[in-house]
Image (cartoon, rainbow, N blue to C red):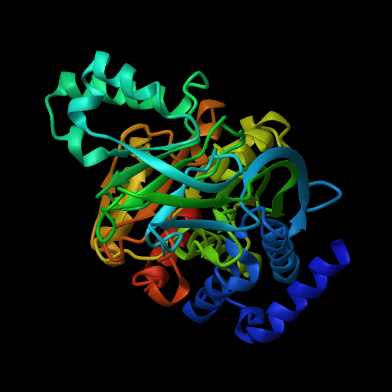
Length: 430
């Protein structure tokens, strides 16, 4: 299997020759995104080891840039169970097949299910009428509950809360003998991942085109809960003057993988773009060693709950007390409206310096500020006492955790100026 990964990475590099060029430039970043978000890497998830091929590629680029390993190797491994959908994923309503990713999503914790089922529609009036609902639920054996989310979300706050509680009971209560739950929504379809399986599937269906659930539904879900080897990749550049103190740059490389054999969540902005920034900066600083040592970490399993960061922090290859500052890159592919700095209101001196550099050099439209937010890998380091920013770009495309986050839709609008800003920021540490 390891040999197969290596062969695939060599093929990818040959297909995208610009990825082998040195230096920090937009073409290198573009080709990095093209590789990591290509269909060949299958969404960098856990179907057919797409995440491992991505890890192999990043390790290759670290070595090619001249980075040194933090220990004997560049890689640090751990294991984690993941629920995946490697086989068939099908949903048909009254004989009309819907398209996964576009028309519907399977909730990530869903188990396998196969068959044709009658439906029982549950509207707001029924959902909030306890006696009537109990009566209806007596006749749902091996049927599919269809709940129109739009029907009750528009109510009062108290009604919303009660409806949400009842909805969760219907989804997950093993005492109710229904086969599955379909939730109709007019919200954007946004997928996630899970490390466990629930007792019954939940399917989220867009109501843009599909509102008629009065007959039968055909469902085929192949789900597999199994353990996978996760890999963090880390390399370093020794500082010119203070080699025992570190600046650290991080970005996660995993994404959502596949839903069935054809639907791929490529993850160009999230977070092939962040890895492109990480690799670009690694190449620059390999040629221009800074005062402090620099550590570059590509983290696994962010989409599973920041698990790669947790593994790294639990057993760090460098002392976390020696990390002077950390910057985490996620969603680095736009920038029309500038960047947002999470933890900016916490580390005010560093934020001010970042803003002053940007104002002087006119790199980006704005350097905006947020407070604490545990929404990416920086959070785990920050909780362990490491001063840290999480930075993401603003404006541009809205594709996120969906099938539309692809290389051809990612503009990399301000990538070069963003990289120059981070270079100046890092070189300013004395």
